[in-house]
Length: 247
Image (cartoon, one colour):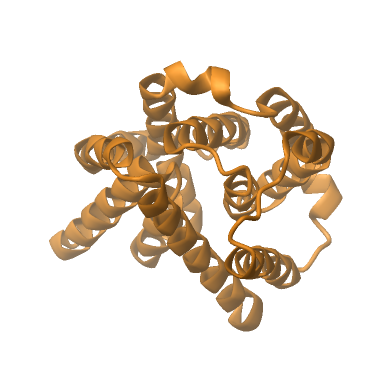
């Protein structure tokens, strides 16, 4: 591969890892589109499965002391796994462009509500009732399309959790969904020895940048953290809208 391409991929993974350390999300959303230019989508997704699982595991361990303050995680995880297993069969007939448009609309509506009603927050009672269908939908999206991140991020953002609690909740969901995805990739024979080696090499920029982002997350104010999440959601909505319109 061209050395310039290697440098670009390295920077993309490092940037994604930095943002993931701050917000709990962002690594695959940033790294995979850049990698796909040089390696193709399938190869990029397989390679990033390894850094995804390792980064989630590291963040879970770092913020493990905050599990006691999470909400609805068992429900979201249980229904999410069910959705992930059945996602391919339930949504395989849907047009991905329509799905991207619906997700973009959900995010934008939520952000408009947050702007017009800054005090907006879902109560524990409301989230307890709505978590089963949300978890099922997120798992289904992950199983069928691999894009559960925008929905999960939007949902947990409405909880108004403290940054460490938000991060450990988010990465725990990503870890379970990502593990199901990795098992599927292995079952399909997509993890070749070369791709495993490439996945391990992708850990290098991630290991450098992820701890920096995690340190930033613990030092910034809740208001600043909220700005980072809103920017991430806007970026996700823009990317989904682009996919819905131009494919």
